[in-house]
Image (tube, rainbow, N blue to C red; front, side):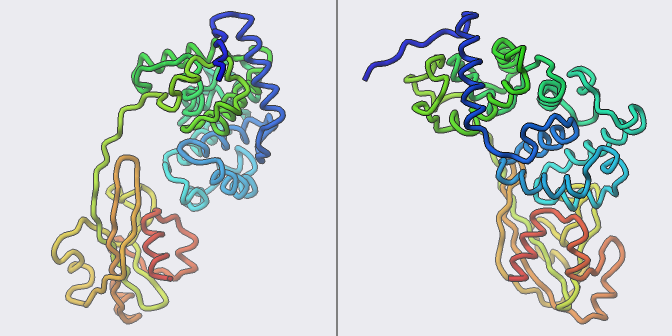
Length: 351
């Protein structure tokens, strides 16, 4: 099989050809997403923070529900935090939505509800880093600044056959420099979306080089591109918890959020590290029954939760309320934000 000569991306003419071929591919193959082709900075901002650490298949449903209830910066600024957390439930990384609301409140209070227009001004907003600022500035306001997310890093690492570990400060600078070298200054927003889409659809962990519209510019092609980018393996910590479902068939005991909650600001079942007499302070000597276990992951933690339940009378359940615990019906539970592990335990019980 004939191996095509790679066209180096240090040559201005080749960079221009690369841009043209990539954008042409994007225009023909881009996914139909509810925020695609929008230049509303609020919508682009929301979609980008949702997409962090989350697959696009998951994001779409959350985005559509969120934008229906909170269509503007002003709507988010005036919302109850618990309602925002409930709508965000399942997306994880809840600091994103809390920071988003704080930034929206700042925009309403200080800028009459108008989202900042430049990369540098956008970075001053709570929770907005280089990636999100670049996406908003380029897509909505045509600023020629490159977006560098995980997909773009993977594409750039292969285009330039970059073999160093990608999470060092030196690598961060390298990716920013190369991405800004490539960005189309006439159509920066469309180019950035095309780079991200290429990484999402073609230049995946298992690269689809035969389908790549810019393969002739890739220095890693035919040189094991699947080995790039280079990442240090994450060390995972295994933890075993026990969660207790105390109920009277109609209501359940849940714990109000505290600074010690598994996920701050989210309600949870009584939960503890596995020890003897784990819940004696809550249910005394009442019998608890193991009904199964659930698996959950948070960043570098791999959690196994043993699920126990304890049936009590309505009067006993009422007595257990207080001191940070509440008895809530299923309908009431559906209105508050609970952490994903608690939701899995409740789903197991209700099945």
